[in-house]
Length: 496
Ligand code: AMP
Image 1: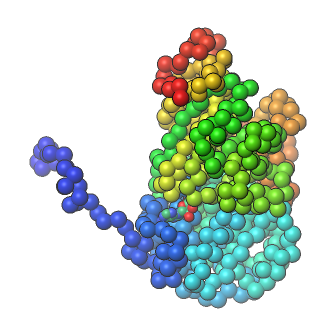
Image 2: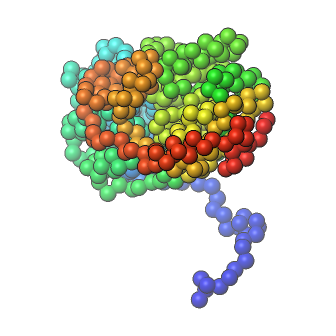
Image 3: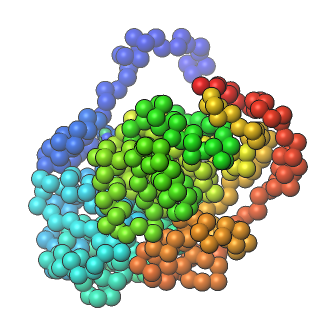
């Protein structure tokens, strides 16, 4: 039998002979105006998700894609969507023909920019609507009809209730970063919007991570979808080099300033867990002579837009962000992402790291980890199925050694509501960005969740977060700490 015959491994020459030539955008069936726009964007070849999604969307199929940020997913739905719309009928006043729902304003703006850029050689109209800004200009824009509308759910429903937008012409619905929309408690609004749309339509669902709630949502929404998974579930981009600096909590700010200066980092995105933490870190960096700005839910939309523009244009060296505010930040080839504190929800680690190494460019994801964060580190390592390399920076050797994470069999927590007790412990100004009033509609126990526009919403499920299986045993193991300053056994520790 041929299959059982041993055969020589292919030599590099063999590989050259049999390797497929790289796929081109033209071969995916895209039209000349779109190919021209792609060319002007500087994209040479389609990314894997584009190779799979573009022909399917062009053919009118429903798609469910599990794709990390930075994989080129926006172009994978925008390009074929524009092509289909260009061949269809004219949009009527106050109507829309394609609806893209996003969880945050920043992502809405980002997707809107992509739509405008890829569609610049087509005569289609696009618009972006989100909360936190005046509604009137958005109503004016909708008056003449918009082919592609990118929207956050709350503001879209407000516009609908004021008769500014009509859905009877909608041909395609896109849910972008659907997992984040569910995390943020948008399910009620999504269901309301779905009920308003024509039954016959194309549905495209994109999600960076995969959960049972996403499956539940997709089951009722998608019709024989093409399932696309461009990277293993819950993994981080291959092109991102990730490691950890072990450091005492009290030394983190000094270590960050030291690294920014010594490593010559020029465009660094830093994540903190709280708004308060973001603001005080910015003050610290500025005191150390490093230009820095914060972006979080307590900043007005105007400030957020300006800060992001300054960071993109390299006028600010360090941008300190909380998780929700950072969604949609897309800066090509952002070289470093720093976790100043590890996120409480392990999935957020993937979202954060997804800000670097975008579209296969190399990036570095670095976490400053103190001893008290070892359980969070263990949960992240379980989720991404890898043990992160640990390093110690000269001059910042921790007095509280970070215990071995390998021994802590921590089950990754589901991105669910935090417990009441935890909230109290965090104190008033220690609220995570998830609980921020302005850009965080995460549901609270006993009260209806709110969105960016302060609207109330319902949640998909109100299940309790699963308890960590081995919290007790983990605690015991934690108490048998390794000797101070002793390197952990599970991973190399390189003093730099
Ligand atoms: P996304 O995953 O949609 O957030 O895209 C991440 C980044 O990749 C964006 O900056 C895009 O402009 C860029 N991008 C999208 N498609 C390609 C491509 N085929 N080649 C190079 N860069 C791309």
